[in-house]
Image (tube, rainbow, N blue to C red; front, side, top):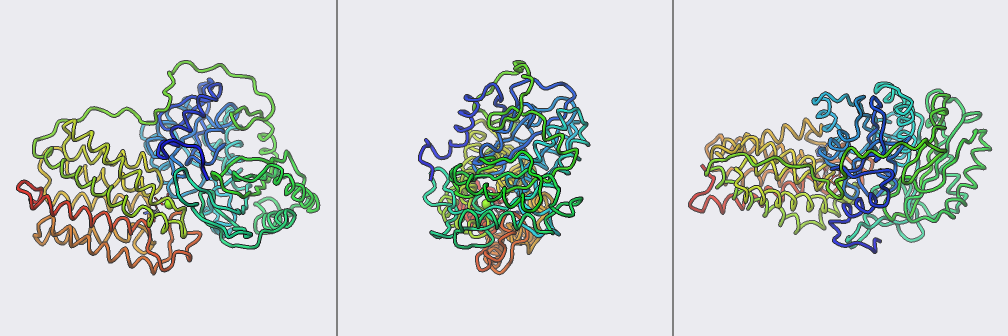
Length: 589
Ligand code: ADP
Ligand code: MG
């Protein structure tokens, strides 16, 4: 439970502001997160990490000499938006390219990949290595699908040490991949976590029971057992991590192998409890003949106030062993002694601001401006609809995902309304109003659905433009572009149990009805009812994409939250369009 906060919505921004105020010798704010406040040599590869907030010291606490050059800091448990990653990477780079590294979660992958594309298009070389250490989230054969938990630290450190040693971008990426290949983690939880202002934890574990194989965003475990003794827990963690299948390539037996063990507290466990567990972990590793190097016991990647822990084993080879010994000096993680770098006073601090400056509103015709008012009204309806269903959407997402779909959609839709209102008041046309709304949505919501809804609004905006009054053909073309864009960006297809299952039939029906000559409001209403049927039918599917995948079977019988919210939203927008077309100057052309 979170006791101290002001406006729950402002929590992440206020946390970052305080974190920076307390750590100016290490970090400074830039839009989207933080970068080192110390000078790094020109020609050094920049390691940029990131993810949602709520995992301190990941990710901002790991920025400083010897570790990351910058961290994109998203909202609580929500991936940073593309603009945030892009902005932090630009501020952190020193002419030798950027390595992006982060835990493998669908929303993060979408946003970091999009940022990578932008950086490359601007001539900044960029590579990505996702961390996939959690052995409970997919079988060995599908290691690339595993999510990232406390093993982040080993990958970030190895990559950063290689960057500090002057390796080029390709080699820093190689080292990061090698470190990830040799990092395995496994975790358990005794209670779920409760975000600021939330009335209930994201998931609960019955009293006296333990969730095994949890995620760090309140994703439920893959198994549940009675709470074991500290020694029994150590035996389970070490046993699963030393299983043959989990030994990395190049390690045939634990005997004689060098391993860095990291026993990580998730937020609400006492250090003393961790030490009791570690006592037995050390005995077991010794009994297995492992050569233990530099053990870590403490908090390295938390999950807000979740009570639980994870054990990571980092299997060193000669190269990684050498990199591991290099000094680090960051707000939350220090090893050895660094030669202090000068403070970088070349750029002004931008405290608290995570919003990149927005360019001026382009000219628009009176017709397009009039229709922008309808867009604003539709977005207000969207936000009101999300408000009315926020709890349900959260509960649906908590079944197999991380429970944030309601609050994410709420943050996003309200930010879209704010951005659209500002645009309309400044005289924007339909296209610009939708583009601004899309940026606001993805920026504030973060996460998978935030990125996808932001993209959708921008695509529709691009099809409508600021010149002509929107025609029904242009609207249908915009929705088709949004459909294509979402599928190419998120790589989900019909049947994967995502919002795509409702979006595709919606776009198809809208095109068909418009092509047959229906008025926009009628075509939209018909398409919305097909989307609702399709969204309900996702109850019978197993998720194959996104955060829900590791817990696929738990969601059987319940529709996909993203598909459900999509259907609710297009239905509500249909009502706005019907009302507008009944009015004398509606956009129903
Ligand atoms: P997150 O998964 O980042 O926590 P949300 O909880 O807001 O984001 O959204 C979850 C929804 O996102 C899912 O219910 C699903 O509809 C949708 N989703 C997840 N992955 C994809 C994808 N690759 N393509 C399209 N939609 C997706
Ligand atoms: Mg979610």
